[in-house]
Image (tube, rainbow, N blue to C red; front, top):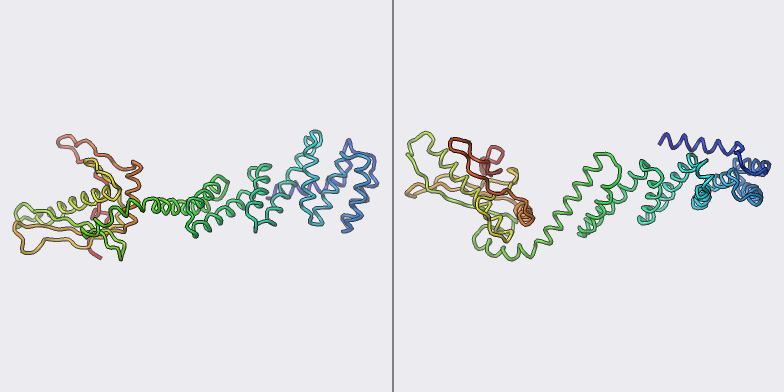
Amino acid sequence: MRSAILRWALGAALIGVAMPGCSDNKNDIAKGRRYAQQGNYAEAHKAFDVALAADPNDYNALWGKADTYRREGNLPKQAELLEKILGNAEMGQTYGSVVNPALEENYRKQAEQRMAKPAEAEAFLRKAIGIEKKSEANLTLANLLYKQGKDLQAAGTHGEAIAFYDKALELRMPRALRRKITAQKEVSEFMKFKADFEPTWQKVKPTLIEAKQYDEKTDTIFVTTEVEVEGDPKAETYEADADRQALAAVTDALYTLTWTVAGKERPEGATVAYSAALVSVVEKGFTKDRKPAKYSYRISLPRDAVVEQAGKIQRGEFKAAEPAAPEGGAAPDAGAAPGSAAAPASAP
C-alpha cells in the first residue's frame, strides 16, 4: 500500500513537470493544472482539450485530464485516459511505472463502488490484480468470493458454494482467512456428498432400524457385540482381557457396518479411521446369568460420522489389510478404535 501511495504521489508530481516529447502547449497544460487544483474542473478540461487538439498523444495533457477526472470522482473516464496512455507503446514504456499504479488503484476504487454487483466488482478487482499480482485487490476479492460462497452454502447450493471457495483460494491472502475459507469449503463438500449419498443411505436405513443399529430420532448409529470370555475368572487380568476382546469385536463390527452403509462388501481386514472423540461407549461389561461368561460392548456415534467414512470407502480411501507381523514381532496397527487410549473409556 505504501509503495502504491508513493507511486501515486510521484505521478501527481510529474504532471507539474514538462515531459520530453510533449507538445509546446505548456501554457494550456499549466492552466489546466491550476484549474484542477482549484476545483474548477470544467475549465481544467477545456484547457487540456486545447492541448490535446494540438497533440492527441501529449502525455502531460492526457495525464492532467485523467487527474482532473480523478479529482471529480469520474473513475471510468480516468481509467479510459490511463488505458489510452498505456495503449501507446512509447508512452506505456516511458510512463508505465507511474500510470500502472494509478490504474490499479482506479480499478480497485471502481470495484468498491460496485460491491452490490459482485460480478462487476470481481471484474475490476481482477483487472487490478492483472496489473499488480500482489495488489490489495486479492484480499478484497477473496472476501467477496468467500461471502458469496457462504450465501450459497446457507441456501444449500453446495456445489456452487465450493466453486466460489475454490476461486477465492487461488488468491493471495493471510493464512487465517485461507484456513477459514478452507474450513467452509470442507463443510460444503461434506454436505454435497451427504445429499448425493442420500439414495444409498435410504436403501440401507430400514435394515439398520430393524436391527436396532440406527435411531432415527437422534440420528445415531449403534453397534453392539458380545464375546464369549475364556480363561480363569480368578485371574488378575481376566476382566481386562475380556474388555480387550470385546473392544476388538465391536471395533471390527463398526468397520463392517460402515462398509454396509457404503453399499459395498468389506475387504478382509480392511479398516477405517474414526475419531475417538465421535465414539461414545454406551454400555460395556459382563452379561448377567450367562454361562459361559460373556462380555458385551455397545457404542454409539453420529450418523454423519459413519456417512463420512462410507464416502471415503466409496472413493477408495480406506486402510487395506496389512500382512501379518513376523513371529515374535509387533501386531500390525488396526487403526483408531473406540475405547482406545484416545477414545472414551466409559459411558456418558
